[in-house]
Amino acid sequence: MTGDDTPRPSQTRLGYAGPLLEHRARQWLDGRMTDRAEHLIEETPVVLVYNQIPHVVMMATPQDLEDFILGFSLTEDLIQSPTDLEAVEVVRYSRGIELQARVPARCQAVIESRTRRMTGRTGCGICGSDSIDAVLKPLRPVGVGSRFEPGAIQDAVSALGDRQPLNQAAGSVHAAAWATTEGSIALVREDVGRHNALDKLIGSLVRQGTDPASGFIVVTSRASFEMAQKATAFGAGILVAVSGPTALAVRLADEAGLTLIGFARPGRFTVYTHPERIAGEV
Image (tube, rainbow, N blue to C red; front, side, top):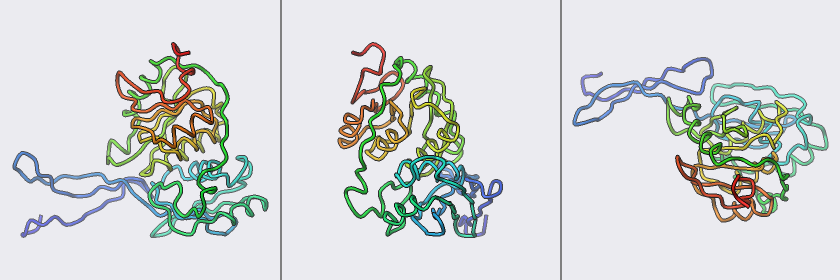
């Protein structure tokens, strides 16, 4: 420490272009001030560029970026299938990252008509949209799918905390996970933005050819309408959130056939729509 006891910022990147920084800080605890190393989650401007045309800047955690652009492109209806994303190059600059994608001409026309007019906030799903139709997209009804035991939902929620290394290290990080019918966590994606985490998860699931009926989505955030909308775009039958849903999310889920579960905590959860997918309900 310096003579005036003022902490000096000191940051060390953990790994090349990694999502965590180590930061020297001071902690006040039980009347004492001590020096300690804290981990900070990185928040980086990520520019999504299609056919050399910048579309939007999102603040995101710089990992799983190929999953991110695929999930974002699908859930925002910029492309119609994974094959429309013909190529992606991740270009890192000193102050941000560009995801340079190549798409067919028919997709480019759609993207040009929806190019955002402002920078997206952290994980903001609708920043820059200039019409209600651009925000409230046509519903995609989900199939009947599988039924799940309440215990599977409880198991997935309980297990998710141990599968979030970034959040354990730094806090302030959301996660989106794919759970199997038995409640095992099969895949997790983390990001400072809840929408980004879900887009990354969906992108990875699509790459792997995952059947939407083979499991359910768990998110460590509230269930806003954008989260429900993205879940239905993937075709998931169940969206589980650790916090509550908005009224619009409930209406959207009800119309689309999505089972929306909120306040999923140890020993309890609330089913807001389509409880028939939960065993024991009719």
